[in-house]
Amino acid sequence: MDSSLKDSWVAKLELNFSKSKSKTFLSKRKHVGPLTIQRPFYPEDGVCHLYLLHPPGGVVGGDQLTLDVKTDINSNALITTPGATKIYRSGNGRHSTINQNFIISQDSSLEWLPMETIIFPGAQSKIFTKFSLTGNAKIAAWEVQCLGRPAIDESFDSGSLKFNLELWRDGIPVLLDKIKVDQFNLNNVVGLRGYPVFGTFLISNVNESVLALIRDELVSNEEYISAVTRIEGVAIIRCLGNKAHLIQDLFRKIWQKTRPIVFDRVTVSPRIWAT
Image (cartoon, rainbow, N blue to C red):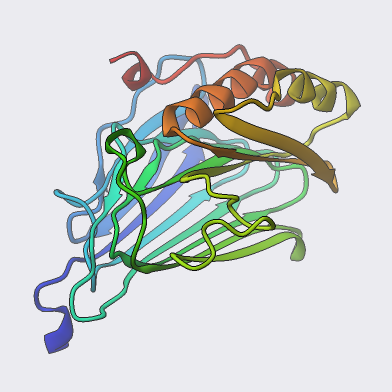
């Protein structure tokens, strides 16, 4: 192993969901290192609920995490996390890297609904997330990033972050979103505007009536601002806020209202959300 990685986690997790006669099941699970899952849950018919477990203690400089997820035709999966992901200060200028790749096949669906990522001051990290849809595949996917710990007035006053979020359908890009964050651009009026928390929520296969439902939930006040746009049938919801739970609550409310229409199934929240 490279000597620069000897004190770092190098972890990879591959998951494949397939459809049996009665339900979606985890047909492949391959992992290297501490990135793993809890056993699947089935709180609703036909949908596999899965809890992703990140390395113990969080992510530090030099860590390399890779998550590859694929849904086969007619399968339906929901993935969340039991707690926030933490990215800690990087030492010796080493970056941590998180690569997340999701392939959603024709006639299948994926709901990627993790808890927030808390990024501590001094972190050096690159986070890449890519969703690749085929045909009429459906997704509901959000990511919420919290810079520092606003609850104790801790700000992201050092470090450097690069985020890359992509959505493709049939090999054609729908969204290519890149953002670089450091202490010099936190207050940029065309960037984060001084807010320590930002989130993006993608919902595919959205028509005008669903878009109207989403807009009904969006508000702007002293705590957060939000907006939505639609590109190629995909609703892109963005939010800036002072607290992570406000954005999480907003995204969950939108998911609960739109799921019966977009996914044609009643809303059944992951059990872990109630704990």
